Image 1 (cartoon, rainbow, N blue to C red):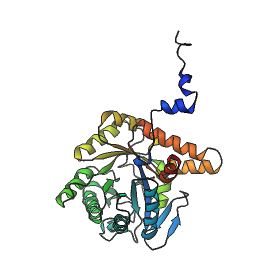
Image 2 (image 1 turned 90 degrees about the vertical axis):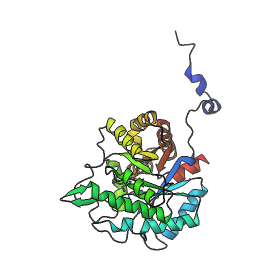
Image 3 (image 1 turned 30 degrees about the vertical axis):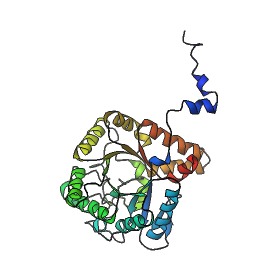
Image 4 (image 1 turned 180 degrees about the horizontal axis):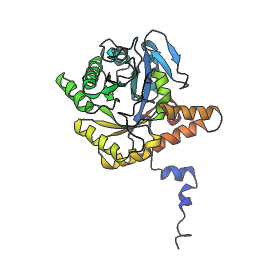
Length: 323
Ligand code: PBG
């Protein structure tokens, strides 16, 4: 009965028709480019597990960010590799820490670029955990104090947004209070709200040298099997004052993005993480997939599912493709 009257192929016959009825349009305006910053000068050290990504010294980071901004990418998110690591993660909240120095240099050289700072202790602790370890466990409440100090020093350095990725309970509220108490009532928080305990972070941990020396992150990051719990985490973060909420990883968790899009009215970000990146790069290198098409298709899917903002190591490539 429906066929032959209804023929969906009619609207797919030419590119003009397809473009005319296309539902999702990707633009670099929603991209965030993640970058790693390390001490030294004139250093551009390739990350073995993430080809085309580097640990940059501040001077070269500035050039890379200028190049990204020129391609229409509005924002970067910074991860720091400190000179030294210790149990108290001092490098995270040192006003002269590596990220704080990078933010100052970037805001001076590329003032219109949004500089987002990841707030977590794992890159700064000697044991690689996201918080203070007491009796073999990550202590939630004492960790909050250090996270708040970290976010404050990043704000003081000129960060445009702070992005807690630690998954401690109550951190958004604690950071909001710290920022407000020091005159940063205007500074947005982008919370990694539904962050899963994922094997897709493997290459990042090599990049940031943040693999836990014992145990794993399952006591604070979410169980990949859970969907309802993600909505609860997001709702709590919004109540605590999150301005943007994030789901991470992206492609394996499109259901979470889609559900969150329906349930909440705040902007939603999704992080196409290191493992998602490296899988594509590796398969492309083997000649098994079309690199450019698979990059654009994965980003389009993340956007179609409901993410307004996409953090991606492909930001520059995708921006070039879209230009
Ligand atoms: C924690 C943090 C991680 C990532 C972003 N922030 C690592 C982790 O939780 O182990 C992962 C990002 C990626 O894999 O690209 N500071």
